[in-house]
Image (cartoon, rainbow, N blue to C red; front, side):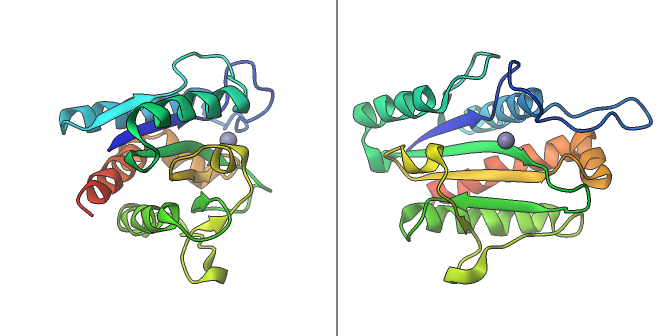
Length: 196
Ligand SMILES: [Zn+2]
């Protein structure tokens, strides 16, 4: 199976960043998701996994182009032989905290893979922040009509890794322990999926 990593947003994306905290630190989503994606890529390469980042540029590559790149690879290696993981950080009102995974509407392989991500994230983050499940259809992922999930042909999921506008979540994200936990959950979940 080929693992495709999508790091959300780009240096030209307005917003998508935390406040500057009293110690001067700030999370900028496009930088952060690239850093995490590179860590995940490195961890998986070490395990011999075929992995590719679909956005290597720092610019915000439009969703249509991101989807086109994924679907090109699907054509080469087969739709069911790919898994797309899009890495993001959430933001809301400053109070919300936690981790979420999203798939497109309906039930398919993506839901099965997202469930593996959920339980892996729970092991690593369950004592640190909230696990925010979308249990209405019986599994923990949220069904979301996001273009990157809808317009890509292979199984696809999108992780919202804590809330960058919540100070506690954000401080954890920015810590070396936090970065390691977020990257590790993605790599560990992929390794479990490859054994299914
Ligand atoms: Zn995002």
